Image 1 (tube, rainbow, N blue to C red):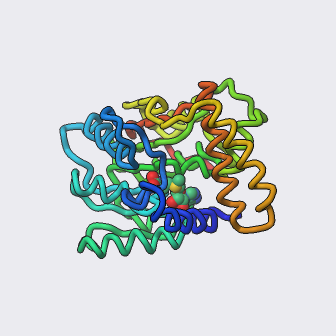
Image 2: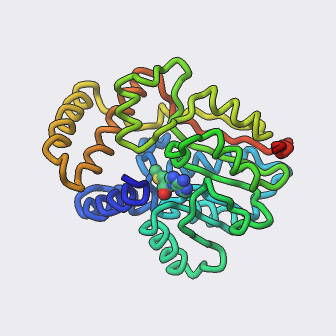
Length: 291
Ligand SMILES: C[S@@+](CC[C@H](N)C(=O)[O-])C[C@H]1O[C@@H](n2cnc3c(N)ncnc32)[C@H](O)[C@@H]1O
């Protein structure tokens, strides 16, 4: 299953659930975790508010980023949220043409085609033609989890940062002690198509190798909505049974994603994975590797 097909299916699910669920990400144009705000409300924009605060807290000289790249932009919700509050020009890339088309249509609906550019591109490819003069900020929300080699991806993305530019990541980061073959961890990786999730140590080493210095680190796990243990385990059993029944139909993608999310919830409960928001600034440009 490719990432593009995976997200095409999730988009269909979001559409179908629009009529029955409160917000499946349609309202906020997001495909990320809906977090709990201080006032108890739950929405895709709670994460956006944390991201905005982190960008503002790490602005040097109180200047907002002029050019932003969203590496794994989904439906574009993060770029629309930030642009409305910070201004600037935004490039969003995704592997899903469904997502790219929706984000592009939303930019047109807002009359902001000159400010937003969405493209179907791989963040592991050379992006020099897309952002030839670099960017001040790269955001990657729940997208690097899909990378084959997250440390290499971080290194490549960092080459697109202007001096002093920032890389902002939000992702599920396992503790270094979590065994790779842990059944919950393996189930999460399989269900969410995350082959090589970066651990705490991987991130630290990747930043150092890319010349990035950590300037903001926030654990958002307490804001993730959690079910009771009984409800969680009942859902795991139900999703397992449904996956077996749907094994030969396209809908198995949705059950796999659901099961992956439930396994992740177990990992949170065990306190072996954290949902982290980190910002790192480009402080030194690593010299290119010699052939
Ligand atoms: C969970 S969604 C998150 C979307 C968005 N960041 C958000 O917060 O709503 C993951 C996104 O990462 C993108 N993605 C995954 N691997 C990618 C790659 N190699 N290059 C570009 N985008 C990628 C997917 O296409 C999808 O848009």
